[in-house]
Length: 142
Image (tube, rainbow, N blue to C red; front, side, top):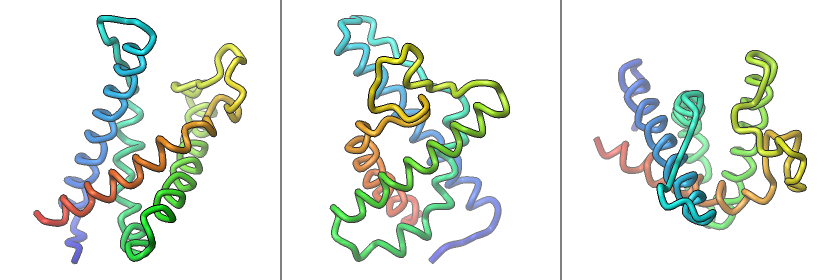
């Protein structure tokens, strides 16, 4: 099913990376709207391209869990994304001195774990995981 040559992996890496940047900008833009910003200011970090791009390496997980009920798959994805977010945030914190998406810069977010993940984002990551499954299936058509 997979053409695992370097160019095919790179193509899928770029697609996942761009999809992630798109999701981040829409999410933060909608957050601006909720806060009353009529400019719909949005932001992301270039690091996110590489982090979301690594989704290419999760394709085998999708193939393995494909037959599971969607609700189980969503929770599996949320757990995997939390682990990846925590790991990549920790690596960035160690290497560049901070985690760019610091969720708890002022200590007010009680669902934050060291400012790197937010437990209350579980529904978001649940949906993002299922969305990336659709992207994976779409990419495989080509």
